[in-house]
Length: 199
Image (tube, rainbow, N blue to C red; front, side, top):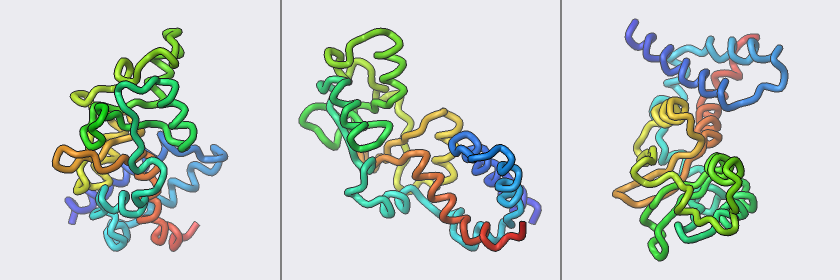
């Protein structure tokens, strides 16, 4: 019993820490109310709503293949300008980078952070710089599989300070999950339990 309670408290802290890092609460005065309600959710209620068993595959299924951000990509030969333009058009913060002609073979990832740090701050031209020159390469990527638990993905994203994580299955790219997707999944799993709590 104590082991189960300790596990729940550990997972609760992961959720709380991630939410604190990635979600803005409108008023600092509301923060104690929101999170004191969260902390009072019992382990039985979290497990009752299937949160412990939620996997990345569940998030991808809910997003759907046509959803913006589920599978957006560019090639290593594209200009950074075109990649950033695509991110802006689709309202996403990262694109998977593939080798030209090999849509399922991941070469890396380009994010808004890469653009800011490696183009803007360094005074480089986004129209003459190739994505392959500034992307995070495949050998440095943090990835998950469809079977990865949402809590594990959230922990990875929080610990590594990343907001987008490619989903790989049998060495092929099958989707992308953002911290927003993960937080929504956590919120959806906990919403019924939170709604029943007394203020």
